[in-house]
Image (cartoon, rainbow, N blue to C red; front, side, top):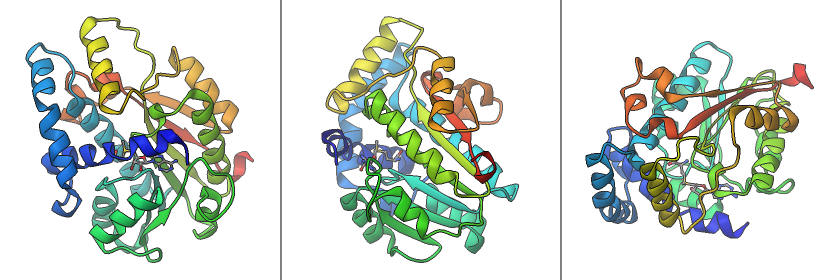
Length: 282
Ligand SMILES: C[S@@+](CC[C@H](N)C(=O)[O-])C[C@H]1O[C@@H](n2cnc3c(N)ncnc32)[C@H](O)[C@@H]1O
């Protein structure tokens, strides 16, 4: 496990609290650590909001709900019936998707061992069943904590989605591209493979407010927020090199008519990666 991996785990408590406060989660996934983080950052977020600037909550909700929408559409269409949420943290998405789609959906909550154990305890999940946990280190290529091993335990003939939310921008670009390689080859085992993730590109807007916001965000995660690509093209090209057959970057603003969160200041600080790959493309 990398040093970055250890540093970013506490942020899952903050996001968990954001999901809970916005009616997206379950009380069991709200932690004391999350409440303390939330209250600590609140004055800074209120100050930014007063100046019409972005807030953490604004882009977190936009990314979460836009990923939900894409995933729900893929499940409802019948293309996807297995979901692996890598770095799931205290995300309530698995609970909500299982509630909506029931037994026909297999949902795997995958995270580093300590977080996976915490989630298993809070939701009374085990490592088997249609809603399960898996202790993963997404940086590993082989072994019992690898994505390959996780995929061995899934049905090989069913469409599978893989989600990362709040993970990529804590890693340097070469590590992100290593993750994408692993994800594309894992999804390429299935008849349909869908990858969804948030990603922050280098901002073209150099406003002092955005710069201050990004500095605050980095301070929150111990100086580890990394912005990788200058533009959509370079990001999409890297996804192609990693092995995805198709890729696009969704901009929350385009969904503002469907999702209120996508109209918030700051929503467009994030892009959503939607990439596909399947047995047919291998
Ligand atoms: C910012 S939190 C996001 C949690 C959740 N996805 C959300 O949006 O609420 C980042 C998560 O990444 C997990 N993580 C860090 N390094 C990881 C790795 N190498 N493999 C898998 N998960 C990792 C952390 O444990 C943490 O739960």
